[in-house]
Image 1: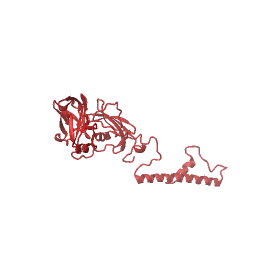
Image 2: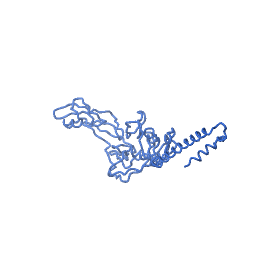
Image 3: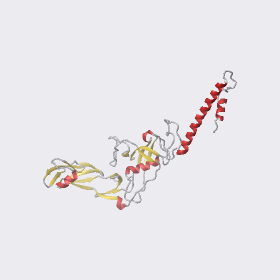
Image 4: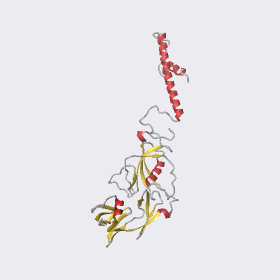
Length: 323
C-alpha cells in the first residue's frame, strides 16, 4: 500500500477548503519540509497500525475488536455451537415450580420433585448441542434433561433477552416397561416400636445410643430411643398425626394394635422423583400405585422462563466461530 494517495488527499483536503501550501507567501521552504515530514510520519503510523491488525486477524482467524463497547455482543443473536450462560425457571401449566437455576421464595408453589438450588448462578450451555449418548441404565438427571432442551431454544436469542419456552418429550424407546415401570403398595405399614441390635444402631447412626435420642427411620415418622440395654436399642414411634405428606401424595394414618397404616391418596398424573429421575403416577387402584419413568420429563409439559445472560466475567456471548 502506497502513502502517496493518502498524502495527496490530505494536500487536496477533499473534505474542506483547498490547501494552497505552495502559494502561501509566509511559509518558508524549511517550514514546508517540516510539515511534509510530519504528514508522512502520521501516515506511516496509520499504515503500520493497519498492518498489525491485519496480521492479528489472519493469525487467529478472528476479527480484532479495537475497543470494548458497552453494546458489544448484545446486538448479535446466538448461533448454533455458541457457548452462553442461561437462567431458567420451569413450572407446570398449573403454576407449580419443578426446576430453577436460582433460589425460589418459600411462598411460591413448588412440586415435590423440585430440588432447591444451592447457589444463585446461571448455567453454561452450548447452543443446539446434541444430546450426549447415554449408556444403558445410565439416566440423565431431570434438571440436565431440561438444560439440554433449553439449549436448542437459545438459538436466535440475544444477550439479555427473555423468552417463554414450552418443553415436552416423548418416551425413550430404550426404557423398557420391565425396568422403568414400578408398582407400589397404596397402604404402607410403619411399626409403633422397633428393637435394633446395639451394633446396628451405632453403624447406622454413628452415635452411642441414649434415651430420648432422635432416630429417623422414616422422615414422616420420627422416633426416639426409649430404652438401651447391653444388646439392643428400643425405639418408639409416636403417631405423627392423622395426615402426613409423602412423595406420592397425602397419607391418612390409622393406628392398629401393632402398627400404623398409611393409606396414600395418590393422584394419576402427579410427578414423582426417584433419585435423579422424575416420572409420573400412571395408575391408582385400591391396592396399588403404578409409577412410570419412561418419559424423561415425566410426561409433563413444562413452561420455562428462559433468559440469556452474559458469559463469565461479564464477557459478551462467546461464538464458536469467533465472530
